[in-house]
Image (cartoon, rainbow, N blue to C red; front, side, top):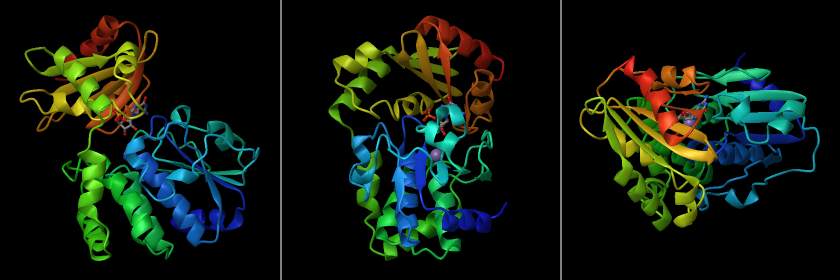
Length: 317
Ligand code: 5GP
Ligand code: MN
């Protein structure tokens, strides 16, 4: 499968739908919005399915065009972005009924669930894959498309600081600067601005943070009750897990967030300088992700989930 095959499918399709993983982050949102803008440049109309849109990204071009559902029962083409697993895909009903499906992603644990799968596990962001793809398709990356792509790159690299960053990451960013994109403004908006509710959640999570196994594991959690009490919005939990990771000596940082009663969404990060693959640990629980950032869903009370996770983490630290 090549990029040309993807372009053939796009050119053939009339009704196109774009989607990404649940609780979308900057890379998921940036990928969907940039894909939609790029398709317009090819003369195509697409629907973008998003059911929880973090307010942080509302400034991006095309943010207002997204839909939570559509009347179209069968699309000619469904494009899944930044999503390793069909079970995490929002709008999977449209994906499953589409005549053709394309998966574009950067997770090493991608299940290759599309008719065409374009997966590059060494790319720091799905958005960076799209940047290369649009260039290959001769689609001009204007400041609107560039802003969406940059959002995904900045959020998925923690602000250009992860080892996944490539020379192309900086070359692409430099090119956008030359085109007049306000890189600093996007950076401040997507990484350096906290809602009050986000801060309040962080405060609670930090108060509860425990250092286990001689300080090698950082663990903390947030319950539904916390989110209600601080009037949390979509996306407010993002970034909490990073705080545990930055503590000296921490090899694995774990943050769990109550999804439903006794069901927790796990976020795991590998500490800097330690060769630990958290994606392998999450895989044991049916999840996945990247070697240094991964997730899963685990059932039980906070204590039970903690115990299950620590038992597996202990084996590799
Ligand atoms: P986060 O902790 O920010 O939610 O996710 C970290 C990384 O792991 C992201 O790349 C995300 O897509 C991936 N990830 C999170 N949860 C899951 C999961 O349940 N299954 C899989 N396959 N990947 C996940
Ligand atoms: Mn991503």
